[in-house]
Length: 379
Image (cartoon, rainbow, N blue to C red; front, side, top):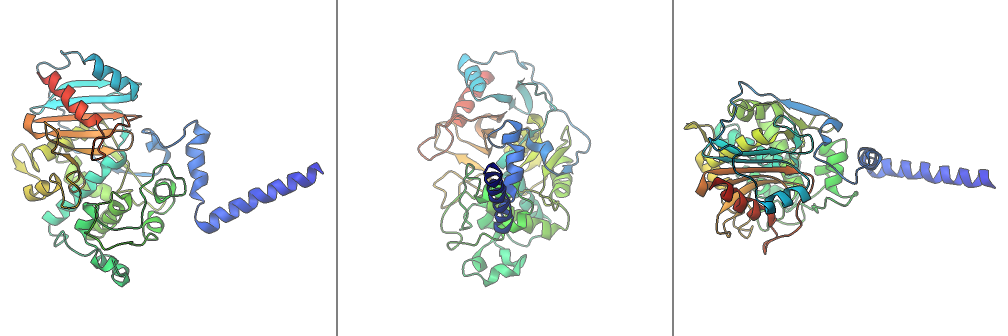
């Protein structure tokens, strides 16, 4: 009897495994191995070493100068409490091009790499801007089907442009759900082939009519940029961002098993180097008064689109409703690079958790808190 029960159990397990492979859910086994079997319940900011990646090479490093008041003022009790409760690992404030505050916890240092999660979307959009500057892509309204003709056969796909992808107005049949193990986000993050995931999700409506944040849109954008440049995204990011900006460390861009970068996610870098992307955006594409990116394109990135209700530009979240307007790169669990043009300020926060409180437009309320606290430190 016991042997029969064991055989039935083994048959059920074998059938489940076969079914997972047939239906394309075999990535779940990797997901379980990289989370629950490691004592985690989901992805983490330290996932970088668990996946294949491509190096984003730095050039000659240009370290940040320190402000004369570097770390002289103590963090407020409220800020310290928030940073502790959200298991922050890095907090950095740059003002007038110099580091004013710099703090690390939980074994992190200024050279420690952390998962950017969706902050990588901003980098991908910047690479689109550079490809436009260089004439590798003729126009931001170029149809996606120019790169992948099969999309021209779809009722909605033929109208999809690169701007729709960058502005999150693609109309994909993609539900952005980080907790659903059977959803496209999990398949893209833990899966083996990004192309299999994003190209299997069709469009559900005409592009350009509705804002809907979808990681699949940025992944498609990454495919188009790769085709237009003829090099990997990591190589392009190295030559157009990491080297010109004088990043202090090499970064790594996580890939699928075929070596394709996850353009929607997962650049492994540190707070100081993430802040330099913020500096580029703050200075409207210029570095030491030398134009690296089109100012018009950066303006387009940092201003809200027509359908986003004032919260999103191209690859950037925007808050012009707050008393101190700002825009920011944003990743899962509260990874932020916050730019405050009015005060010539950049704030970087990296960590394991985010405060769930949202404002009236469903933006993270904690970003306003970080802006307010950073200004106290600056004063």
